Image 1 (tube, helix red, strand yellow):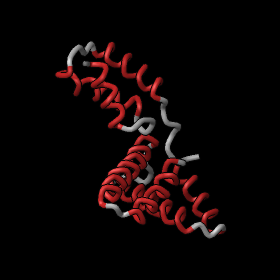
Image 2 (tube, rainbow, N blue to C red):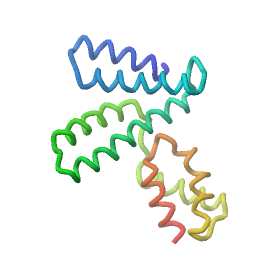
Image 3 (cartoon, one colour):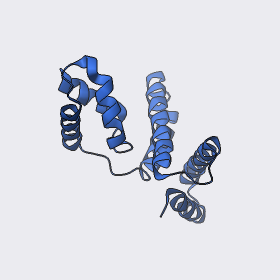
Image 4 (cartoon, rainbow, N blue to C red):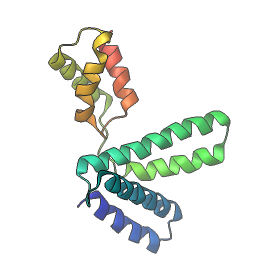
Length: 148
């Protein structure tokens, strides 16, 4: 089942159950997916493109969450946490820190990187492998640790 089909089914269920928050998030994600399809000039997005859109939505919310938390806006923080929980239902299973560390080690060995100067090369090689399965800032932290 594609992401769009899953979203449509969940949207119907959210309407029946009168889950306003879930419904609103699903509609927002569907709009983002449709906008991306229009931008790319296609009818249907690939699984990879869908994952990119979902990851972007999650990242935007995490950034906003950090800013609202810093500003002391607990009402908005709670709303964003709820949205993040709903969005994370549609992301693939996240990698554990051990799994991520192992992937970083393998990729560093593949690329042959030995210093922090080659971090860009390592990140370019690793991100397609962990797309949607790990937060980019966490990947960055592990790569820096490994190259130190």
